[in-house]
Length: 123
Image 1: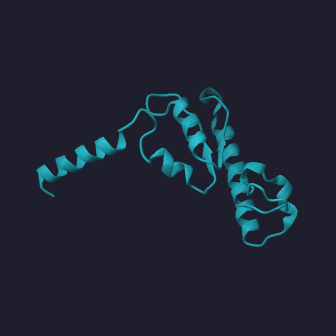
Image 2 (image 1 turned 30 degrees about the vertical axis):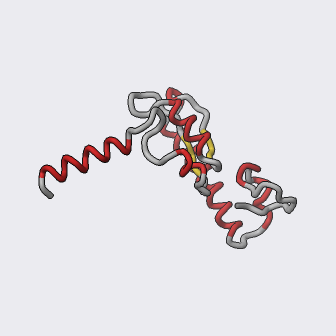
């Protein structure tokens, strides 16, 4: 790649990634359409502001916000939170593909299809 082309590419990437006051990357409208579970872990440094984590919590409809300040996020606590979240995702996935209804009580309502009266029907 020629230097001029590379410089143009980097300039476009910068303009597209950092074009707003919120988190860089995907547009909020695109995030609101995502239909996947997401674990949001807040940070507190130059690159990972707690406000950015709250923004993602609001934009990701099926997000789980881990409300622990960065100072309290020890290695073992992070591992435990991530393991719980992945277990929940595995339960949702298993249920979606036909595993027993006994999992339904363990699943938070935000993961259920709105308006469903049947216990255990998930998005």
